[in-house]
Length: 238
Ligand SMILES: *Cc1c(COP(=O)(O)O)cnc(C)c1O
Image (cartoon, rainbow, N blue to C red; front, side, top):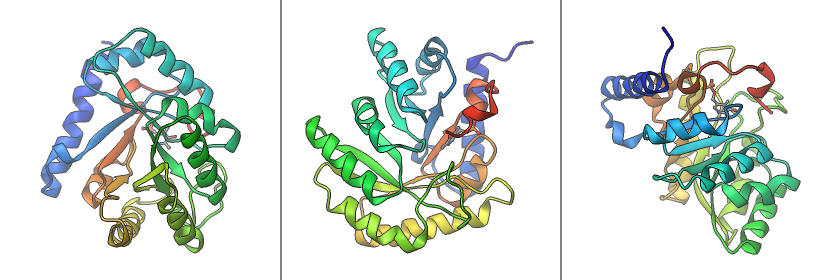
């Protein structure tokens, strides 16, 4: 029997609820971001009607096209778009055009570019600082390492058109994700000492959302478990 979108949404919501029960947390603290990369707009619209209103994309052009298509359909509720992928400066304009939160801010030049694009578009942009948790060199995955973290944080705080909302990370895939998630929570706690409103912790994907919720994540980014397996492994990361 074919698994329906409704079954998958219920399954993911059930996993979030169980993880919250185990951690003594309220499921209302968790935002489910449906990562819809590689998924056509009609199937994304279906997830939206099932109540998943936060949607994430990792490629600028694909995200902008899908957001425009869904906006044209005038869906109610309207989606709130998150950008979760590695972002090149020359795509900043495209991303600010559709996304309300960028999870992947990881270098100074991106901070200044996003700030000036947001100013030009007469808007403010919610941002998360993406942290590199294992110190390995993962150009495809991104993230700022501890040495540059305070400079990037200060630059975001000094930007008039960026709102620093918290931190994001992709756990190392090779190992138990829990120590990495605990380190991320440590960074979040330090950040909240200088910016108390920066409470978002974006961590956890289809395979490790329970560990992320147990550590303290507020936003889980779920693709495969909501939409089924993607066709190409290359769609996993940009
Ligand atoms: C694809 C992607 C996800 C979702 O991954 P799944 O394992 O399919 O749930 C989450 N975060 C980022 C940054 C991604 O690129």
